[in-house]
Amino acid sequence: MKKTTMTAGLIAATLLATPTGAADLRYGAPYQQPPPYAAVPTWTGPYVGVNLGYQFGSSALSTNPSGFVGGLQGGYNYQIGQFVIGAETDFQFSGAEDTFAAYKFSNPWFGTLRARAGFAMNNILFYGTAGFAYGRGEVQWLGWTENKTLTGWTAGAGIEVAFTPNWSARAEYLYVDLGNETYTMTGLSAGIESSIVRFGLNYRF
Image (cartoon, rainbow, N blue to C red; front, side, top):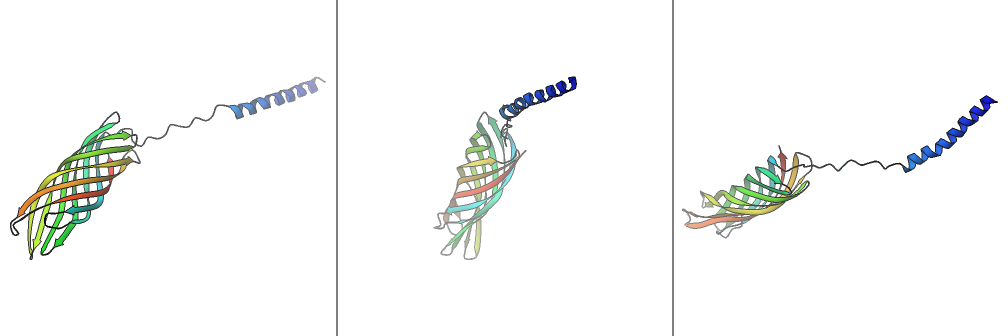
């Protein structure tokens, strides 16, 4: 009799405990999701990268030198709150060229040295840029070739998106104005003004 009573008590206790446990499992505190991963805790630091794009140009020699461009860039960012400032330099090889009558004008390479300022939204950076530009102007006429080093200015804007703590991709527009120089063999003064759209990949240290 005593044994039967103890058994019944254990069964009753188990039945009473089961709903409570089920309720705890059903109505317990929800699982806390980890905070979203931030690809870029800060934009501060040096970086290097590569780019590829297209150059739409015009010259005083009634030509519109255009072609693909590609090159290297490097720079340094410093972030203050959501604001990012920095400096960047790049060097580009260009296939921009055009022919008018007996003249062929090309811009085989150019480079820039620019300041940058932008606004960061976690892993997205919107920025503007402006500074100094330099490059090569080349005129071919009746089998003769003459080169000039051109200087001028540049300005533009872009967006850069970080997809890992070290890697980011960008899309950028630049306007480059390389001032005129006089070419002795033609007696004509010419430079090149270009709109450049390019895409790049950066590695941040």
